[in-house]
Image (cartoon, rainbow, N blue to C red):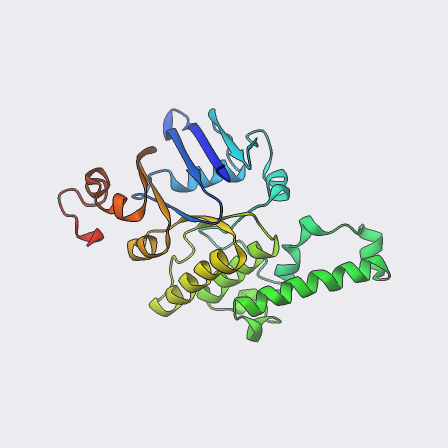
Length: 258
């Protein structure tokens, strides 16, 4: 059974079609890439999956259950997490504090229990900090764990945002251009972490990415959008050879996939 099953999504904004009957499935413990030219509807699709947008038609099924009527917080509680194209961190707080905020769905102590910091509240916070420290070690950001996020370089902020998403312990991780704006070295690091998240943690990922080299190297399956329509879906090698995909990117020039 697919972990994520998107069925016939239709999304319009004042008559403009952002998504037109888009369907695809994501198998468990895979990296599934969503690609397409600018304006193809990729982020709109991610917003429908995460609950930010409500499509006019269609359903989103997660672990066999229809979650189309749930809000983003409810979907997060089921095990969905995401990063954003534009970094959405609390930039006046430290790296560690940002990760602890990512543990909110796992916190059971109330305001009083957490404020007193005694007994169950204290034990719970210690447990959450251990999870966060493990993620900090995993993503190799020990040296910035107490730094204020707003003072960090862009590439490190992207890594912190990934860390905060992992703090939710998601079953499905939605990555919206995780390597946008990075230099070659930062991209190599991020690609390595994405592979390790998949292989070592068994986390399923849906990733929007414009770097075709990264997409073809990392993905198990690729869905291609163009003007809100799905024009291809399959393994990377199959999608690479698809003439509709080549034409959508470069018309008669197909060098992007060479």
